[in-house]
Each structure stands twice: as structure tokens, then as C-alpha cells.
Image (cartoon, rainbow, N blue to C red):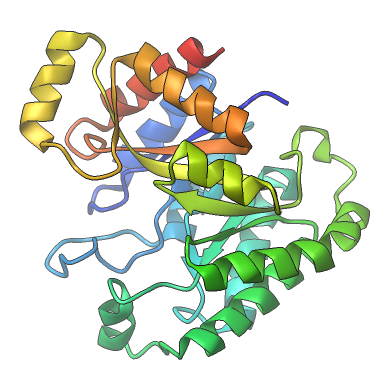
Length: 284
């Protein structure tokens, strides 16, 4: 199975047209999917705007035909379990079930303040993990491809538990038009994981990868981007061929998808997606 490549949309802005333009470029240039962060504001920046993930994804679903669409990740607790399940199923009704990837997570201390500010529940780790498993099982049973995102041991255990329980049910529930759907109905998504970490996780459950990237069309542009955005831990950077080589290593280690977040996607949303498309061509 070839690597599927996705990109996160520019949603930390008050201008929705940026996300729609980025999605149009992604579909025209052959990317596999687009994803949206599920935050009430950018991490640590309550003074900045953020568009709601499902609102953006619904709009993208209405104007595209082939792209997979999904949150990355939809956090339990921001909505009640049944409301979150309903939001995903509503998106599936707009895009078609075969086009939706429901990536789920539990949040952490970095996102807790968002919940508190809006009066949303931020339960204990045990409570959040229980909710996560409940929502994941319900969505897979409904025929929606589902990922559990996180690198903690608790998430790893939840992913193994859900994978063991839902795979037979999920295969039976897959829609008849799902020939183009992701190859597995359930996976664990690893943010900014190394090749070694992907390989270790893939030994027990199907895995996908997501993380920040910085791509320059040539060494000169790459140098300019690095000067502007500085080096950050875990960022995959390089010219398209270099980034493609790293993503190919992740795929060989077991990642069925790589979802890229370009650091420059807000300052130049179309160009950032175009460089991810160049990575796609280099991978193939």
C-alpha cells in the first residue's frame, strides 16, 4: 500500500477563504487529505482567532470531491460524547463516509486552559481515556475510519484495546463505496514521532504519523524559511526530496499516512500546500 499524504489547513485565522484555497490546491495537485486542528485558540495564544474544525471541514467537503477530510485531533471533552459522535457523522453525511478520517484525542496540560475558559469539562486522565475509547468504538462501528492520537503509554494501551475490539466490527460496517477508503478502519496517530517510534508502535497496532514540516523549493528558499521560523524540536525540514525521503522512511516503518503541518502555512497558505505537493511527487 502506497503512502497517503495529507496536510493541515490554515485555521488559526479569521479568514476562511485561506483554508478553502489551500484545500483546492491540495485536491488539484493530488494530495490525499486535508485536516483541521481542533483548538479554540492556537496553543498558548488566546488572543488569536481559530476557526472551528468541523465548520471548516464541512465547507471543504462541500467544494471538493476526492479529498479525505477530518479533524486532527477532535478532543473529547470539548463536546459531549454524543455531540462529538454526531459532529463526525454529520461530516460523513456531507463528504460521504469513505472520505472521513476521525482522528481523536484527549488533550493535555497545554490545551486544558481552552476547556476551562469555555466551561468545557476537562476530566481526569482515566475519565478522558474512557470517553476516548467510547467515541472511537462508536465511530468505527458506524463505518468511519478512526484514529486515536497521542504518544503516552495510556493512549498506546487504549489504541491496543480499541484495535482488538473494533476491527472485526469495522470491517463489517464499512460502506459499500469505501473502495478508496484508508486501508485500515482504525489506527494510532503519532505526532512528531521518530522513525524508530513509529516502527515500535506499528508492531502492535496500525499507525499514522503527523508533524510539523518546513519545505523550501531549493536550498536558498529553505535557508530563508529557516531564518524566519528558526529550528524547532521535531520539525522535518529540507528541500522536497529530503523531506520525501524522511516520510518514505516513516512509511517503511509502518505509517500508512503522513499528515504534514507546514510552519509557513499561515503566512503563505497556498505556497505551503504547493511545496507539500512537491514532496508528494518526490515520494512517488
